[in-house]
Image (cartoon, rainbow, N blue to C red; front, top):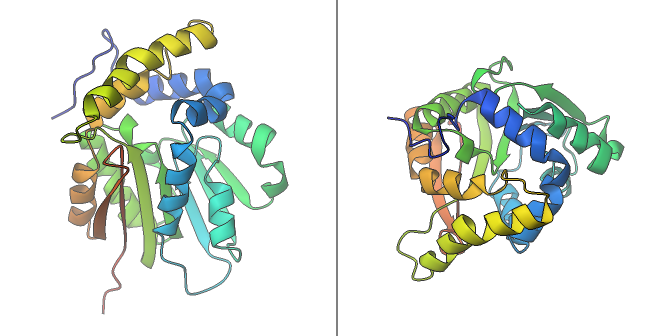
Length: 249
């Protein structure tokens, strides 16, 4: 069953809707996401990278799904200095351009950019030593998450590891009402004031409420044959799943 749409008659999980959304906010994404998260987004990316298992060889391949403007790449390159290449996959054309123009020109020879839907990528099977995604899962409903889990299991090499993190809805946390008020009421007003009436980053409230947490993604990854552990970050304001593809003997 799909999650509710919540935004007029638009299907907020339709790939074209998501691509257009991130095309519009691409130029502000890096700065605004850092401000609106009070800096937690950088910490959570760092923590996500630390959940990856180091490859046993140099020159390994990392795949960054829903790569955005590539904020996770410095964390990856510091953690794995012998990394060979990063394959950056994102459905938004503008996100790829911003990644090169604003942040990562010096990494150009290491980054392969692929403009594609992560659910339909034609990356080869057994391709990646590492798969990571930071804050892209919320744009998939539960059916899509199951498809994505199968794609991750397919492109990972046996023994390869993955780590995925997403902003979540911390149900049960005593301060959740304030957290939800910030996402649902305050953030949209700040965005309209500072970003000329934009309503793109305010979609975070809708997406996180629908997403809940990474429990379903963890189940989908297990069903796809991967070893998985689920972790809460800052009282469940973000949740991550990490693990590896078992080696068959």
